[in-house]
Length: 290
Image (cartoon, rainbow, N blue to C red; front, side):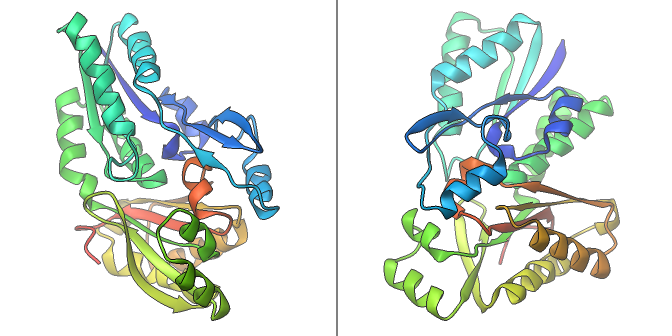
């Protein structure tokens, strides 16, 4: 039976990689300027235009992928004779994982032989995407479904997510910080450094002064925590701040011997809550502890 890897559009992987590896992607819905869209990796609204709308004062918001949409996508793969591994956006940040379980259970009530495995990535954006990347690499190596599932469950909490944002008001709007903290932080140019914890939620690690310093801290965290660096594919994503992403890449390459560094945009699922200027790096470490 052919194995099909499915994820959702929050993975923020490059579209070329998704096509080359025949990954099925369930799109998140989002809304901007009172218009609804499916997250299609910048085809309906380019990433640059999305972030420019936010800069002009538009307030995008996202919605959940419903169990019905998951059911449709799962059934389409099963009808082609495939076994499924779905790697989901963190359950601590979204109901996506739970909705996928509902869809799976509905199908299993009708067909107990359907092979659908739903995995909570405990990750977001390309942290989730990095798990998908390694699952695809294992599939190309001929690994079994059980081997891939076991590797993902054993290693997903080793995927480090370290990021900063340029404007604290977006985190305030999402309820992550208070209005007072946002105002004071903006005045004194405080840039928060955050990471994704073992539950898959956001945690503040430290505050630094200035954008350049925050970029250097991201590189320092990678240098301190990465394991087997020469074998690792590093991912950087950004909220329409390519020059900063390129700078972070250069700092990392100058300090650490890595296999490669891939840069991509942060899509609308996370970008709606972090805004322009979000910058993040993703890599494998021993753990996620700050």
